[in-house]
Amino acid sequence: MSASNGNTGAANELAEAFRLLFTDPARSESLCRAALARRDDPTAQLMLAGARRLQGDYAKALELSDALSQANPTWPGAAFERAMALGGLGRHAEALDALQRAAQFGPMPGLWRETGDRRWALGDRAGAEEAYLRHLDSTPPFEPLVHQAFAAVQQNAIADAEAALRLHLSHYPADPLAIRHLAEILSSTDRYEEAEALLRRLLERTPAFALGRYGLANVLMHDHRLPPALEQVDRLLAREPRRLEYLNLKADILGRLGDSEAAAACLETILAIYPNDGGAWTAYGHALRTLGRRAECEDAYRKAIAAGVHVGEAYWGLANLKTYRFTQPDVAAMRDIAERSRESDDRTALLFALGKALEDQAQPEAAFAIYTQANAARRARLPHDQEDRLDAFRRARALFIRFLQNARRGRQPRR
Figure 1 (cartoon, helix red, strand yellow):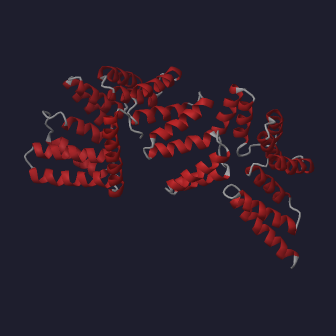
Figure 2 (cartoon, one colour):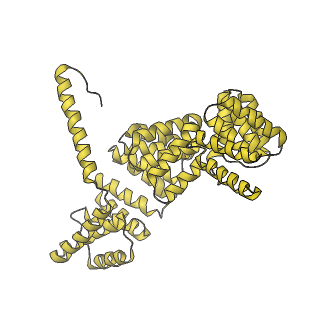
Figure 3 (cartoon, rainbow, N blue to C red):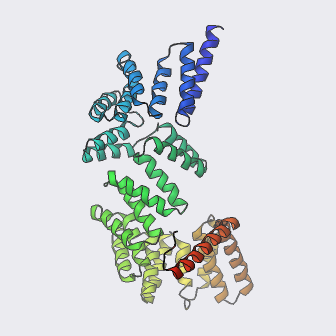
C-alpha cells in the first residue's frame, strides 16, 4: 500500500470516528485505533481520549490527554480534553486550572459549560452561574450535537433536533444551552410538564437567566397554572419593570385569572410607556369589554386599528360587541387590508369581522363566502391527526374507567 493510500485510509477512518464519537464512542475508539495503526496522529489520539472519556474511562482519557498536552502545550483541544477527564475523576480544582489555561487560547465550544460544572462541583454557585451565563451567550461554532440540533430545527426536523439535544445532555446533563433549547422544543409541542422540569433545572443553576424564567412563566401559563406563572413574571418585572414582554405576559395571565381590573391596569402601564403599541390597545379593548366600559372599549379597538398592528383582532373585537355596526368605509378598509395581508391568525380574524359586517349590511351571500374563506384559512393552520385524537380519547377513557373502578375501592388511580 502506498503512503498516500495509507494517509487517505487514516483520514477516512478519522472522519468516521468523529461522526460517531458521541453516538457510538466504542466504534469511534476502534476507528481511532485503526488510524493510529497506520500512522501516528495527534488528532486521532485526542479523539481516542474523548472516546474513552465518553465511555466512562476517565483515567485512560487523562493518560492520553496528559501526554498530548505535554507534547503540545499550546494546543487548546488537548488542554480542554484533559480538563474534562480531570472533572470526570472528581479532581475539580485541577480541572478548573486546566480550563483557565485552555481559555487563554481563545473561545472554545463547551469551555464555559465545563467551567460552570467545575465551579458548581466546588460549591462556587456565583462563579458557576457566571460561567453558565457566558455559555448561554455562546456564538457559533457550537458543540457537535448542539450544532446538529440547531441545523435540524432550521430544517423543521424537530424530532431529530430533540434526539440530538437529549443525546448531548446524556453526556453533559447540566448544559444550560441544550436544556434551554430542548425546553423550547417540548413547549412548542405542548409537553409542558417536561418543559417545566427542564426550565426549573436550568434556573437552579442560572437564577438570573431572564429568558429561562420568561420561558417558565409561559409554560406555566399555557399549562393553566396561572398563580405560579404570575409569580415568575413578577420576579422578572422586579428587575425590569418597563420590559414590554413581561408586562404583556402579566396582563395576559391576569386576564386568564379573571382579574380584568388588574389586567386593564397593567395594560394602562404599557400604554403609558408605549402609546403606539397596537397589540396592547387590542388587549386593553378586550379587558374593557369584560368590564362593561363600552365607549372606552371601542376607542381602544379604534386606536389599535390606527396603530396598524393586530388590526384583524381589533376589528373582530368590534364585531364581537354585537350591537356595534360597521360602516361602509369600514367594510372597504377591511377588504383592502385583507387583500394586502398574508395568511395569518390576524388576517383570519379580519375575515370573520368582515363577514359580520356584510351580514349586518344584509348581504348574506357575500358574508357566507367570507365566512367560508375564513374557516378554510383557520382549518389549514389547525393541527389535526385523527389517530392522535383517537389515541387521546382511548387513554382518557381508560383513565376514567380506572378512576371509577378505584373510586369504588377507595383508591386513586395511577395516571
